Image (cartoon, rainbow, N blue to C red; front, top):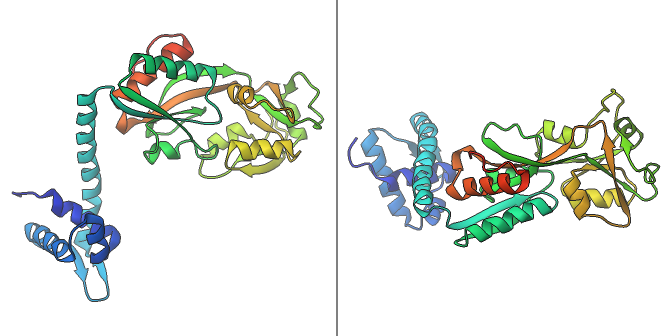
Amino acid sequence: MSGLDLRELECFLVLSEELHFGRAAERLYVSQSRVSQLLRALEGRIGARLLNRTSRRVRLTPLGERFLAELRPAHAALHGAVKGAREAARGVEGVLRVGFQGAVGDGLMAAIVAFRDRHPGCELETVEIPLADPFGALRQGEVDTAVVCLPVAEPDLVLGPVFSRQPQRLAVDGGHPLAGRAVVRAEELAESPLVSPAGPAPRYWRDALAPAATPGGRPVPPGPRVHTLQEGLTAVAAGRGAMLLCAPTAEYHGRSAVRFLPVEDLPESALGLIWRKADATARVREFGRTVAATCTGRGPTRA
């Protein structure tokens, strides 16, 4: 095929989403006649119709559906290659958006300060991401990298440096039966409803933050399901249940109405820096090395 025109392909992609020439023209900032012209040119190159259109309806032909399925990943890969080359040319300069859950603890703040000192040409922005959706902002391109509570077992994401390993904390209100304790045993989780994340978080991740049973097999009563950390802490303060948190978040959100108690016999909480496999820019890799050196004390890691 000669004379391949990206405008024709992008026109077809938009038309396949809108199935309406007027809306497609608005998205492409061209006239409807130009949309028709680009589609006819592409169909001419291929030698068959990709869309059937009448005065009432626009729909893909079987060939159009097949072409769309093959074109989408190729188009995304092409844009990714261009973006990757642009990022490589710019190096670490630009904007780096770092997502976090709950709080920016001392370790992460130290890494942010170190990164800014070393790379003044890169503007680092911090963005809070919902408790109930630890990976959504990253996948949707709202952040470039994120610090989240472990575990992370997502095939499209890279888990970089892991840090802040500490006993989990149980948040309870001042009138809770466990409020006067210095330490809580994991089996005692069965004695109180446990606040859990709602939303699109994977089941394994939600189970880690709100297990359905103790290590000994005793069932843990389900408590309120919340979307944000503040919703969870409010439910705890109101006496509606207890909530497991990582240590940095508990330390940051200390308040008189809520006690944060270390929990024995549970896996330690830990934070990890994650990013998309397909979009590891120079800025992301350099920030990963900075977090590894600052927060783990183990020096740079290969990102």
